[in-house]
Length: 159
View 1 (cartoon, one colour):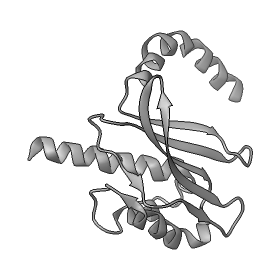
View 2 (cartoon, rainbow, N blue to C red; view 1 turned 90 degrees about the horizontal axis):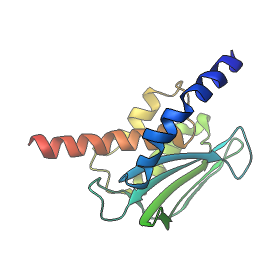
View 3 (cartoon, rainbow, N blue to C red; view 1 turned 90 degrees about the vertical axis):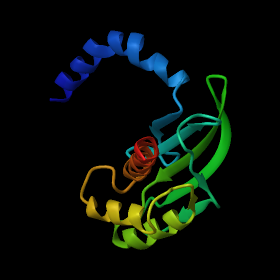
View 4 (cartoon, rainbow, N blue to C red; view 1 turned 135 degrees about the horizontal axis):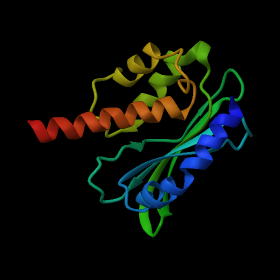
């Protein structure tokens, strides 16, 4: 039940606060979830990348506005400060149009620099997981991108 989940979260909060939460200040890459500017249940998901960090960064060539089904989505990139560290943020607010998913993902993928993946690979991976939770918002997209960047790091280390 929802009450049991809340109780479990509260029970683990002291350990989280002591051991997990402090790590975010020193992380090279962070995935942060916030309520959308359009309100809940929609999300704004931020890929926060420390400048000069060891994790290879991505960037957007241009801001993107996706239309179609409500609420639509906006992707943008900007510089910010994260616990005193200079960071670049790639942010997705809202949801893609699931009826036009492949075309919208291709537009997003073509606007991302630094992916180190095969052309269309992000789109293909996302379309395969179309029915998975988060596939319509920045959760699935940015987790997929992080996974590909982890693969990039692994391949460099094992080459």
